[in-house]
Every structure is written in structure tokens, then in C-alpha cells.
Amino acid sequence: MARIAVIGAGMGAMATAARLAVAGHRVTVYERTAGYGGALGRHERDGFSFDTGPGLLHLPAVYRDLFVKTGKRPLESCVDLVQVDPGVRHLLPHHTIGVTLPGASHGGVAAALDGAFGAGAGERWNGVLGRARDAWDATRRPLLEEPLRADRTALAGDPYPAPRRSGLLRRRPPTLAEVAGRELGGPLGELLTGVVAAYGIDPERAPGSAAVLPYMEQTFGTWYVRGGMRALATAVYERCRERKVEFVFGAEVREVSVRAGRAAGLLLADGTEADADAVVCAVDPRLLPAHSPVRPRAQEPAGGAGAPSRLTLLLALRGARPADAVHRTLVHSPGLRVTVLRPDDPATRPDAEHEAVTVSAVCGPGAAGGAPGAPGPGELLELAERAVPGLRERLLWQEVRTPADVEAATGAPGGAVPAPALAGAGGRLLYPANATELPGLYRAGGWAHPGGGLPHAGMTGALVAGLIVEGAEFRGSR
Image (tube, rainbow, N blue to C red; front, side, top):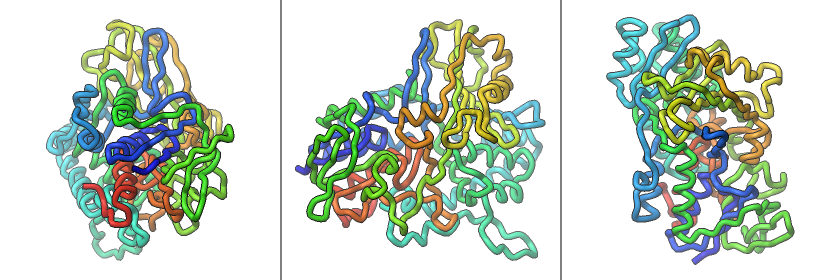
């Protein structure tokens, strides 16, 4: 039985801790704040309740697998997980009707697009997502289920099989924006780029493989946990406690201790030393000193460098939630996409005559709505009113959560939020490997392979646990 020290108590950290504990190791989690969950926070006021981090879950199979592998009770017995249907409503500039897309139904989506944009629109959309499926099939294991290899050639090239344009030689793989323009155009192209941009990924710089993100949503659906997504963090925390994982809160890590050429524990800010046989860093490595061995080396991917943050409005509304309201609406505006979440969940409101709404948009790290080019709360509220008619008249109060609030919750400088890893772009959108050059030191969570987002952070648990339990022989999760 080895002693494992885990830095951070976010979702990737806890997923790693639970898997290592069930493998027989003694695991201690050191968290600088007073609680668990990282970005998956909750804010309550006057009977209203809001998620302050991710409001939805994609690829729930990641957490189903975690609960199957770490205990007797499956995920659905620990949380009330429901599929969101319709999956999303899009409100486009200069398109007053909008389009509502069903969840996890390629045929249903095609029919909805034909109805909104004319015959053939659904076929063109599903053609792009069919090519995205090919990219998914080609990279799913090396990108999501296997440790990042030293030779990253297979993931450096863009796997999206863009059709050749007649009479032209393609000198380079197209960007996601070019895929949208050439293969879809008009409002369909805006749907594709808007979904990807909402992940904090710039369609103008992203490879065509970024189309796997809308493919993933349309194929596997979008899910919500009743009571709020914070309930998922609580379920994972309780599973860790069942497996005898120890948590030390209010414990800021100053450095990783190194002895005899390997990780040997942690040095805490109060001067305490915690010995360990292996260390897992599941926080932004920028929180540790520049010379720390957990920092990516020059030959490693930058992973999340320059990642944007989020500006969020928590809105308490008077009046009942309309029966035909859609859980998620993506409001498209030139240069900006605003996500409006309206969960049909009694736990989010004081009674049936009120409604809790969350509005968010991607913004630059450290921006608080006043930085050049950054959206402000007023702009978000104006765009949200397109999704919630009469919003201003119904508004009781609002709270604004800036990147500074994200930084306070997660520690990430500027409140940066890592996006999922993507193949292509010469490996620029990959993240540092889970195993480091220092024996006994590993990386987990959204700042390590395979990147940010609830499912991707959860995947690091299987990868890091496999590397520690099986060593160099580990070839990937099964």
C-alpha cells in the first residue's frame, strides 16, 4: 500500500483519489480552500440556488464508469441524472424564429434544421457531423483513453476529413471556421462555430477536429443533475470518503518535495511536510513555483495557455418558469455567444412562482466586463432577454460573477478555464502528459491530458490511477 498525496479537491482530483483508494492505496487530498469540487460550486440566496461552474454534463459514461469501478452503488443511485431534451435552442442574429434541436437524435436534428433553414440543411449538418464522427473514431483512444505518448505525431495532424474542393489543392487542414463556411455557410455555419466557441475555443484558430464537440453533444446527449450540478461533486466526494480517502482542507501546497530523484511528498504553506510515495498535482501548475517539477517542460504541450475565463450572471426572477421554456439556449451575437440556463428544477427556486436563470459568456482571463473587447453584465442581460422575454420586468436581483470569482474558487490565475484537448493544430491544443519526467509525480484534472471540462477532468482519474497501479505497462483505460 503506497501513500499518495493529491493536490487539489476538484473533480479530476477526487476521481483520481477514489480509483487509487479502491486499488488499496492510502490517499490524502490537500485542498487550499475550505471545500471540495473546484469549479463545480453552488451559490444560494433567498431560496434561490445556482451552479457557479459547469451547469451541464456531457459524456456521463465517464462518471458512470467511476462509480462502477469504485463501489457497489451506481451513479444513478447517488444522483438524479436526467437527459436534457430539447438539447439546445439557438437564437441567431437576424433570424427571429430560432431553432430548437432535440437531444441525442441525429434524425430529429436534421428535421428541425430542415424546418428552420430549408430542405437539405439537415443533410449538410449531418454530413459535417459524420466527418466529425470519423475524427472521433480516429482519436478517441489516444486523445481520451490512453496516456499521452511521447511521440504525438498521431494527434498533431487534424483527423477531420474535410472534402477536397474541386480544382483546388488544399495546402493545410482547414480551421473550424473554414469548415463551417465551406461546408455549411450562413446560419448553419454559425451553429457549428457557436457551439465550439461556447467551450472557450476560438473557431478561427481551432482545427476542423473541433467539430467533435457538437458531435459529442448530439450523439451522447446533454445531462443535468437535479438539485444542481454541485450534487455530482458531493456524490464523488462521498464516494471518496467511503473508500477512506482523507481530506485536509485549508492546506495550501507550497512545493512538491523531491528526494533521491523522485517525488517524496509535499511542503505546505504553514511549513508542514507531508511524506508520500507518489504525488498527483490536480491544480493549475502555475500555482506552484516556476521551478516546480510539475510545470510543463519545453518539449511538452502548453495545454491551456491563454485559456479564457467566464463572466456569469445569476438571476432571480419573479413569475413561474413557462412550461415551454428550454433548459439551454445559446444566443448568438457577432463576436459573442451567451449561454442561458433555465433548469426545470424546484431545488433552484423558493417556490413555483419564481425562477432561477444563469447567464454566462466566455471572456478573457482577468476581465471583469470592463476590459477592451470583454462583454459586460449589461450586454449579457440584453442578449439573455432574447431567450427570456420580459426578463428585466421579472428581475428581482442579480449577482455578477467575474473571472476574479473564478480565480478565488479554482486558484487558476485570471480565472482561466481550460477547454477540452483537441487533435490537430500541430499539437498546440494538447495538454501536458499525466506522467511527468520526475518519477512518482503525476498530473490530473483539467490542466492535464486530456484537458478541461467535467468528462475530460474525470478521465484523468482513470489515466493517473492506471499509471500508478500498473506503471509503464499501462496502455489505457478499458
